[in-house]
Length: 275
Image: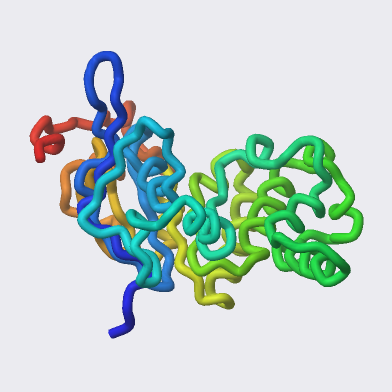
């Protein structure tokens, strides 16, 4: 059996506040190979904090703890700031929800992707154009010279994906990468991600609210609530989930052929928050 690309055991993240500590992530454990892992749950369930913890991209006051946090054999907890900077972007990349908050508004698209490659010269320009072509952007030469405000939301998201994938990372963390897009563009972006993950053999962590999307796109799913993992299962088995929280999430989804007058609300058991 091959060694996991990522090993996470008993991950905990706490934020101090004026009213006491807030435990945003509480004992999360999972492993990841070169596969697609979905993380779903309500807003505030700890999905995004879990993703950022892997890159140690947390506020200085946050307390990060884990029994094990290893990427390709490297201990991320003991890695120096310099070692983490070397990993970010080159081996582990993060795609955010809305490109307009991630792209520099005063830099041309091509320059930003070239910066992610950490190089200069004609060879870098060729690699940037190849990265734009890989995410199915027509006329990459023209897009290379555009500013972020000159591209649509869908193209902006493709550019972000191109930027994150240009260094050919081993792990891509995609945090709600399609929620700001219309359905047609969303499907196009997912098809690009699926194709690139398959061809490059990367690991993918796909963070989303959309259970149907995760069930159709991912290999495995973690269901989170209150900073904890409620259930872990194969994506194909999501509809047959047994945990009451997962069942509640599924029951609250609207359907085209739904005959119910009202969608049911989630019933949260206080015991789910107990350690």
